[in-house]
Amino acid sequence: MLAGGVDQDPTDQPTGPAAHASGASGAFGASAAFGGAGEADLDDFWDRDEFDPPDGNVPRFDADPGSRIDFAITRAEFADRDVARATAQRLKAVFETVRGARENPELFIPGDRVCEKDAVEFAVRGAVADLATALHVSQASIRAQAVEAQMLITRLPATWSGLWEGAISYPCAKAIVEHAAGLPDDGGEEAAAMWAEYDRKLAERAAKLPPARMREHARRLAEKLVAEPLQTRYDRAVTGRRVWTEAAPDGMSWLGALMPAAAAIAGMARVNAIVKHLKAQSGETRTLPQLRADILADLLAGKGTGYPVKADVAVTVPVLTAMGVDETGTPVDASRLRPGDLNGYGPIDPNTARRLAATAPSFHRILTAPVTSAILDLDRATYRPPADLKRWVRLVQPVCTFPGCGRLAADCDIDHSVDWARGGTTAATNLGPLCLENHRLKHKTTWAMSRNPDGSIHWTSPTGREHDQDPPPF
Image (tube, rainbow, N blue to C red; front, side, top):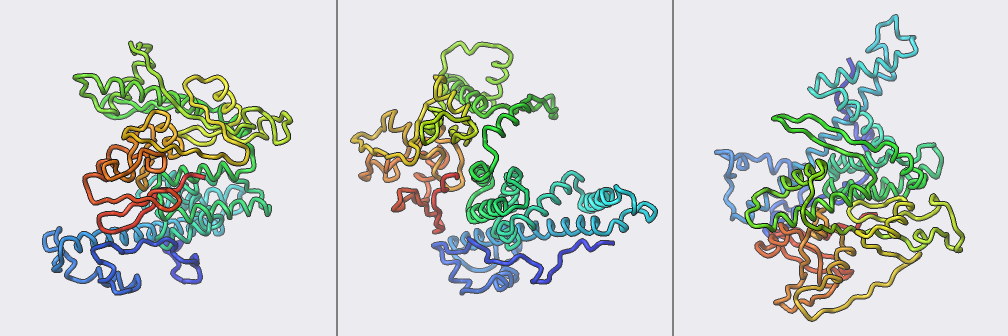
């Protein structure tokens, strides 16, 4: 029987600090209670009997409500790190089991078949099935975990170290693995350097971003680093476009589509525009998700909307890409042009970017200089920003500025960082998108917003924890 546990020898574990580890530094003073104790001491601290609630809710220790809340948040932070470490141990156990089966097929294959050419393949299958039944998960799940573990341990050491030490969550590590699949794997020095840069840059951010934002950052960095031109990859991928349905319970069904990003983003923008129109009508009681589903069904069924709708989407196109030339002015093939950027999605192939910039009336076209672009900031003397300033703010900051929120700026309020009533100006330097939920949070709780010297937004939580606005994607 193969050992399914994890080797606890420290020399066999990833090295390196647990970068960006969360700490209890809230205004209520939880960190002072820890007295600079190490993590093992903190584990002992939390194991004390007085933290065992008599009724499952309230700790026994005598503390003011603020400290108790701060302790609870800190305990959640450490529990989250424990989950990441436990997941890393599980992945390592899966990796070791599969590797053991590959190296010792006789443990899973009858003796008279060990020399057959498919012995290793079926030994691995046997190990996967063994793990799946022991862990009560599907074999497909175990196979996916084995692939993730192998890539993390052998190709992404910084990400693996962060996961092992609890500084990076498993969903974020998984996002890094998924988007690494397109990186070159020829064993050369250039490919190795590309993997190292991808791993290092994303591991630095993975400790601070939620999974949805991490996937966006990983996708953009992979697009930037990958050697194969985006145009070539798009031309290959677009041949796989399709539509499918999947049965759901209670007479419902899922409808999915894989299509070019420009078509998907424009279609969703049109659906959202119709939603906003209907939601403003008197007597409309459907929720936004229900409206989106009903509108899509009506459009697919050929039912007219009965009113004009305009859906706006922004596409950023390098000026040389729009012209179809290189730095010398010589016409070149699309594979040698820089990709465009579709707001709400990311990099798009040069041919699509050029087509949208030239012909699409529902897209706002933004041309960028080959090297850099100057930004003109206009101060305003009124409370409500005009349409052109709103559009500029949403292009510069394409998502909600609250940490971890990826709601598109087009669906957000334009908020004054320093309130207008307190002397804040209606200028690009004092405006930013905030979704309705976080806009209310800012005004109805003690969440506090300020501006960093570079113009980015800084948040302070009610318990004193400091957070910066998410960095822009690569």
